Amino acid sequence: MIGIKYLNDAHLKGFEKYKYNCVDTSILSVYVMHPFWNKVVLYCPRWIAPNLLTFTGFLLTVVNFFLIAYYDYDFRAATKTPIPVPDWVWILAAINLFVAYTLDGIDGKQARRTGTSGPLGELFDHGLDSYSAVLIPIYMFTIFGAADLPPVRMYFITLNVFLNFYLPHVEKYLTGVMFLPWGYDFVMWGVSITLAITGIFGAEFWQIPVFGVKPCHIFEMTLYVSAVITSHPIIIHNVYKSYRDKTGKMRSFSEAIRPLVPLSSLFILCTVWVLCSRNGIIDMEPRLYFVMCGTLFSNICCRLIVAQMSDTRADLWNGLLNLLCVVAFFCILPYHFLGLPELSIQVERYLLYGLTFCVTIAHIHYGAGVVREMCHHFRIRCFKVRSDASKLTAHTNNLDVNRNGSYPNKHHLNHRQNKSK
Image 1 (cartoon, rainbow, N blue to C red):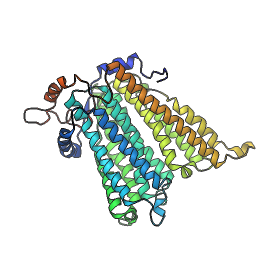
Image 2 (cartoon, rainbow, N blue to C red):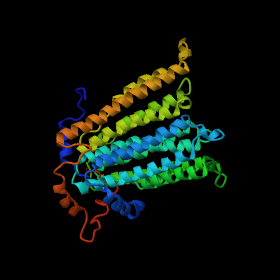
Image 3 (spheres, helix red, strand yellow):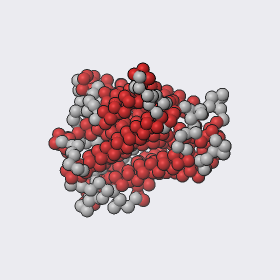
Image 4 (cartoon, rainbow, N blue to C red):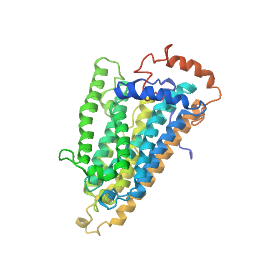
């Protein structure tokens, strides 16, 4: 990786001591999905590495993104007659998303079956999920279209999704426990069903008002309200309880808010660019702008995941934000007040292209570098089951299930993301 190292000795030592601690109380997850996943994983050959399942699921979400973007790059297909997105695209996207969701559910179970548990799997899984956090909402934006859901509102919906994904990792950074949010399973089911309905009845179906309210507005409000009711208060309570009972990391206030600084900086910089752009960048290139923001978010989130898993200090700043600062500055500068020629549309567009390319390459390099360094340290292969792993499988399976075949503790063993592969 051209001589760049992302993990120091403190990170690697922390990973050696790491133990996955998770609580999943979602009714849909515990009583519906896990019984389904327990059966599905039995059809998966033991030679398939859990990380390969994770990566395959992520690639399916990427395929959906590019396939839908091919037919509707600017979110304006819904205003055209006939709508240029074929019905089979929505059906395929629904299938791909549900398969990706299933692979995300069985990879941890496959790790226990193959005796390949370790910290790399969780980091790999959550890291890829942080990238999917920007891809999956974009499917919904295409369904509703920019006419009913303007790009600036899409942008704030995306920020809300980022926040909902990021805060549980901040919670774990402070408490040492991953409390899996209920919303994840319902969102994956909801998006999959929505895509399927679109393929069956057409995108025009979502133009029909419900009690006088358009479905896109219901979708928008549901995301905001569910976060305020079912996510943020619970996270605040769990953090407060960990400090009260002294069961968490007991970090000082200044240390506790460190993870929020780079995320807040990203939100502020991107929002200022959106609102003060000389040429309305969010209307010009909405899809690419979301990808740029999502890539930066994923990098910030991945670094937090590394910190909380290795029990090291979270970053106060992300170096990629420096590039964002420079580009945003040139795109919001009031040139006419300075007596300079106004920034042209093409120049601002090329600046966004260049920024997106640079941060994407940097983020991929970071992810590949971290995985490579962890594989080297633990002497494992990311996408290959160790030849001696079969010796550990029987012992691991005995830990997973009791005599009657049920999980001894559904909250800590039978959960969606036991990703300590």
